[in-house]
Every structure is written in structure tokens, then in C-alpha cells.
Length: 134
Image (cartoon, rainbow, N blue to C red; front, side, top):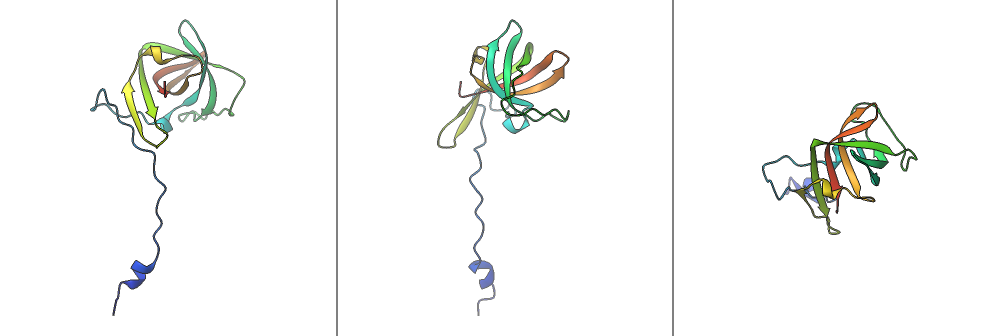
């Protein structure tokens, strides 16, 4: 008599493959940038003297309750400081991903970004900017 047959005869749900955890190849001890924690995501529309303008595609608000619709018409002024961290995220078609430390040179028109930072009266000050497939 097989007493555990009902447990083995039931199909088990197989979760969808999760996105691979990105790795920072240039500094393995540093924490990873998690795109799901981004305050803003969007496309760079124009470079400025102090940063760039972002056309937001999603705004999570980071606890501030700020929301914007996809493809909003207003460009968000983003200020970059000497403390802004730049990260390159390389995502492959096969679901692989890796991260590397970057620089301000990653910021170009039409680049897709993930931003964390804080709201200011004049826009947004970036603490970290992750560029997708620079």
C-alpha cells in the first residue's frame, strides 16, 4: 500500500522562470540595483547642463504617492550630482542579465533608464541611474 501516492500523483505548479539576478561584475561586493525599486523609468529626451530630461514611462513614486501615465507629455528634469551612481544593465534575449559600474557617459538621448532619488521643486535629483543595454 502506497500511503503517499496522493501527494506524488498531484501535479505541482512550476513557477515561471524568474528574471535572473543581475550581477555587478566590476564590484562583486556592492549591492545590486533592483529595477523594481526605481522611482522613475523612461527615455532620455534631451541632455542638459545639469543632467537630462526624462520622458517617464512609469512612476512608482517611492512612497510619495506620485503617479504618471505611460508616455506622459511633460518631460521630467533630472539633476545629476557628483554623488549620482551610474550602472549599466545588460539584459540578453535569453533572460540573462548582468550589471557593471558605469559613468555619466552612459546617458544619451533615447537611452532607457531606471532612476532612484528624490523629488525636488524643480524636478528629480538622481541617486542612482541604471541604463538598460547602453
